[in-house]
Image 1 (cartoon, rainbow, N blue to C red):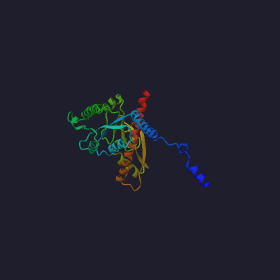
Image 2 (image 1 turned 180 degrees about the vertical axis):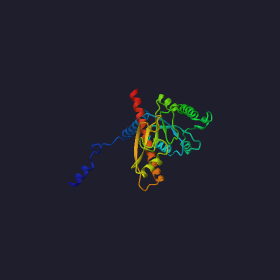
Image 3 (image 1 turned 45 degrees about the horizontal axis):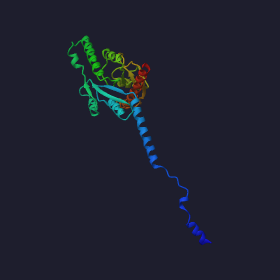
Image 4 (image 1 turned 90 degrees about the vertical axis):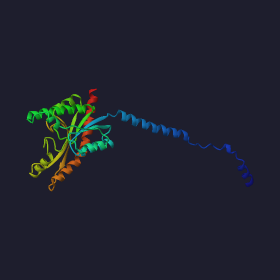
Length: 268
């Protein structure tokens, strides 16, 4: 009996076994490729659709705030943003070297040559500054930027600069190491430190604001309070402020860029 059963088992027709379903690897591979290609196409479309922002940056010195902007453009903290030129009113400003290292076009535009054309009187100085700022506006607008960022720019911009840019729809923003309507103008950190020592303020701050003719009186874009500690030296306070400036100038520039594109879209 067992021998007969064995012979019957041996005579099983293997072709009658149910077929085992196997995945179609060729189809899967095509589907994976199409999915990857679709993702790349979406990324390209988003990059094209994102509003591009071209910046001109004005500096006068070391350029640490400029460096924060350069880095932010590279690491996408400032998406779709390019610095088209860095302009300095001081020939030896280290910020120019930072720009050159980043393959960014630079220009040196100094007031001295304009002052030499006019008498050393209040009227002469005013005339020199007016001409200087008019030419600065032409220099900036030649690059067709979307926005100008003053990052440690130690020169008060005259109406002969601001008016042509406003007409062209190019906003100008500035980083100032004080809160709105506190310590406008030069030496803001020194004055804040002295006011704290005298018990007049409990903290200071920094802001990014739009530039108007009145010094540091334009509409704030972003502000940040900065602590002053009882045992702070002036150098320690300056260091704390500068560390926060590097963050706020990027955030403020991004905010101003978004405001600009939103207003342009609404006007279209």
